[in-house]
Image (cartoon, rainbow, N blue to C red):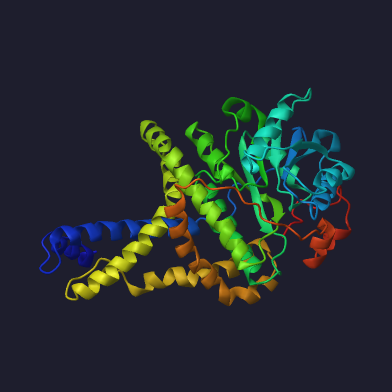
Length: 446
């Protein structure tokens, strides 16, 4: 602390570097260090599950919604899986939105037992528009559901998923996100890297946020929306990241997203680096667009109501800009260090061990997740490539932030891993594959 204080005194009238420049760099570096410390504190909150869901009798009715664009390779397996959830069958219905499909998705979904809404709109394309259409069609039906659960067509769902959502709704939660695991973590280093990223995010980001009584984030699939909330707010989330957009929209109105660690969905991850780049670039662009749209409202409401939850969400929305700023500041600090070699830098006042923490976390956190959440071991053979995968977020985020202002077209990710839930469990060596839906234990998911 004494070194840092001396640095700031020096920065005001530095002998080599202009004082205004040194002070500006000091403030920016301080912000970067603050954000890094904030993330470190969040990680500390992920080592325990403090708010477990208490089972309760099935009562809530659900509409299960599956937006699907040319998903004939995977849609039937998901519908068959949803038919066997361990929840009274009369309390949920399955709806598929065949969105601008040119293949057999609609026919396969009908034969598997789903109600299919076919939608054709070449202009308003994407998952957000498909969900808007689904909610409008469901509102016109005579049956009224208590909640809507959304899944992607490539998913497989743990049989106890709706039991957890029912219990969350019973205790008063209105916007709930389940845990997203990877369906195909053994399909190469890219899929394995995604799997490890989600292990870390699930445990040390989403669960940690709930443990600190902060709002979680919707993840696009495995999410549940209380019907009354949707009627009040409307959907209207049609950006590149409709899940984050509705998260921010609901929080502006005082409704946080709750994390349900026990409700598990298995999601197919990209197989190639090129596919992963396109998908992640869309995420970054979408987050930048949501930040531009909702930051002012979150800041205004957060300050007006003295609400730390809304204000903390601002830090989440600023994450892409933090990555870009940290990258640019790191380069600028290196350059200024060469131009003014005798001048101290705030970065240099931080013990070296602090700089090694992010690198060590990339190796340690996936290993910790294996023990805490019983995730499969085989993807760890790609652990040496995981730091490289994470490093690619930096140039990707720079490109995404600086291109977010352009009108971006939605581009679907092709899914090909059509496996059943029983096959998934066999791959993971779980005895539960032989059980029927009524016999499936609540914690069957790894």
